[in-house]
Length: 509
Image 1 (cartoon, rainbow, N blue to C red):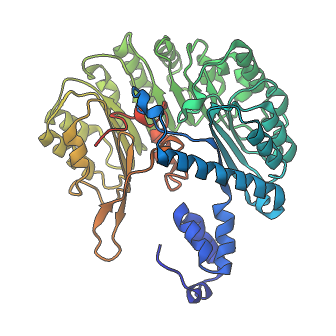
Image 2 (image 1 turned 90 degrees about the vertical axis):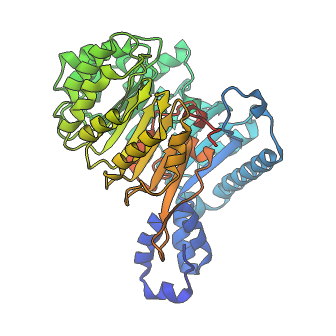
Image 3 (image 1 turned 45 degrees about the horizontal axis):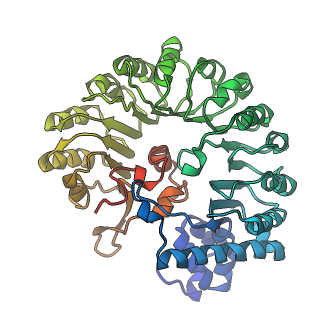
């Protein structure tokens, strides 16, 4: 951000500066704290409206590398810095009412190696002062979140809380009903955080079902673990607009969603590989081919080991000519040797006139220019974000260049991400070049590495910034994507086990 002098602040009304600072990146908002007294006050309310508290230290890990468990000097320094900052924030909340009322969103990252009784008590004390809190998120499992945290939230800001993203705990259902403004609830079903993908024991499964029965009528977004949503009275959720089901072992009864949730705008399912969910969903779609008329986002991560062709055909019929469908992301993970079975679904893309965000899974032995030609025909020219998840063992550099020229023709493309299951070096090398990038491109992803694209204001030349820190990838929200909900939605569910699950993983250089 260019330096801003006092004279500049006089030339613009403070209301204008407030709007400017609201849309600045977080780093630039922090810079504004040191410009002038007026800008400090405006920036302060933005910088500290979203606060993160850390217990322990999150580390992105190489899945098969036990050596990564060992800390180095930097890890100890970062652990000390983050936890000292967290203590100071919580202490300040209890001592400064003005600071406490500034906080609107609070995230807790629980990645400590042992129980933290003192920190948990300090957190509960601080929560009692956060009367303006609108959003609370708990990530990680060490220490486990106690029910006292939810009790403190209910007492201080329960009537104002809009978003709650937490693991299930005993006694939760008795408190959720009192959150009269709640619009988004996530219970052990967050598709980006590994800490929320652990299984539940039977008592907590019952707790989640009871909790769903007590949710207030204001609820519009629900992310939930397993098939517990289908065990609740689905007819109560006639006004639900977004549903994400994480790791259901069964989708028996899923037709209730198609029958009762007519107002649903966004549906996501990340199915377990041990289940027959794909066929159960296929049967429901075949029975209700015109259901969910307001659907604009569909994300399905299926394990279609059996009958992938039948599943793809039915899904194609379900989405064909569907007006208003803006976002589509489907992966079959069929273990098939080629993706020929999925082309009937791909062919329907040309009928989706409103499609702007697309996740495409392709697999086979050799990716050729014929594949590119077929894709060029079916991919909408108005795409704004695209993720390509490919399993091709052979993808020549010449073919990659032709594919990237296909993307260049999509002149509205802002975000492109490649998940490279076969670690194709030519793809990674080509993404680093500027020749193929459409002028609208702002973000490029390869595996777990996301590179912002910027333009020099003087020369007009474009350049890549360093890729995001892996912690930012792990805890990504719409804020990390500069407020672009489409980009956050597209990467959602991919890399659920951490950055290393975004192939080819952490060691991509």
